[in-house]
Image 1 (tube, rainbow, N blue to C red):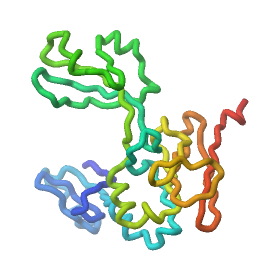
Image 2: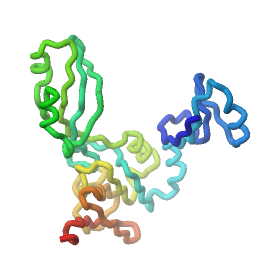
Image 3: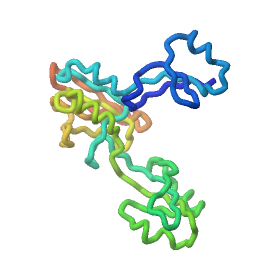
Image 4: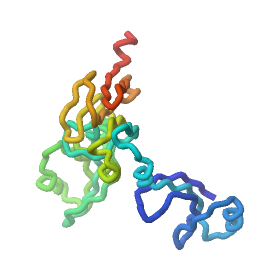
Length: 235
């Protein structure tokens, strides 16, 4: 039997332990309740579910809150802490505007030689895909499309707004998007200078695979950040 730990955004499912069945979820609280249904073939597994909207009830002092989260909230600026630069594998069918996404991978690991070997068309940002994609005359076509866009979490943005953190929160250190390492700005996307004490700091502290991390300094109800590049100390 399969066990899982999930963080979800369905506000209608409270945090708790659930048995997964063909008909849906059944909540259980004790090991005895779980063991009683182990032999039922309709049972697909069990999971511990954490509803991310529970965060709101834990925010009792927005003015003094530092929210550390691996993934940042969603922004709309290409200078944001949540910007990713990647290639998306898409599969198009002739006569359909929609496409099926087959996955994404960072530009940093993209190998154009492999794309050429597999005879996969590669399109850069701004290319007119529709004007070019059917030159080969096939009914289905898989292409790689370069993108640079904000991929932060919309639910986190909603949670921050509804809990008062967006306007009053002290700092929001994050990471995840390696391309945006060591960026920092306020809630409106205005850049924040390193070693400057402010309120409402959104900061991508870096990624260790690039030897980047940082330090957050707190002075009562203001914070500043210091970016650190380990390459400067490993020479």
